[in-house]
Amino acid sequence: MYQFIQDQHHYVLSVDNHVSLMEALTAFCKDQNILSGTIGGLGAINEATFRFLDPATKQYVDKTFSEQMEITNLTGNISEKDGKPYLHVHITASRRDYTCVGGHLLDAKISGACELTVDAFPELKPGRRADEETGLNLYRF
Image (cartoon, rainbow, N blue to C red):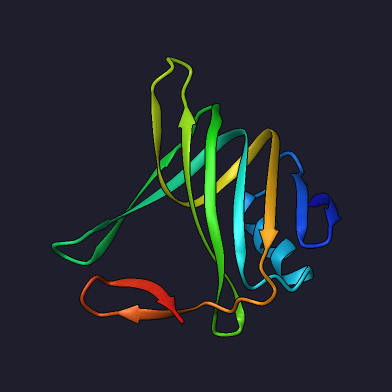
């Protein structure tokens, strides 16, 4: 599902072809017991589902794109919710016509390569709490 190397709390991660990016990243964080940190990366995908929160209704709207795309930027953070890693990831993906789509990533399927860096913060323990006003899971310190 993935391979990695590390230097103390810094990881370089390669996600295998044809797998779920979020499934692999979640498994990596569980396997390494990472409950706080940052994520960055790039790669290629052939399917991505983005999630958009409509602030007026507090309802999520999901949209899936099924085409070959390059991840031009992936950024996110890791925190803890209910004793498990909670991943908050956004990406921008370039399409064949050089237009981009992006936003909050629900999931993506790797098509080629996915190269990530993870910086863990073992001494920091941000959690998540449901915020009724925004409908979001916000940091809890």
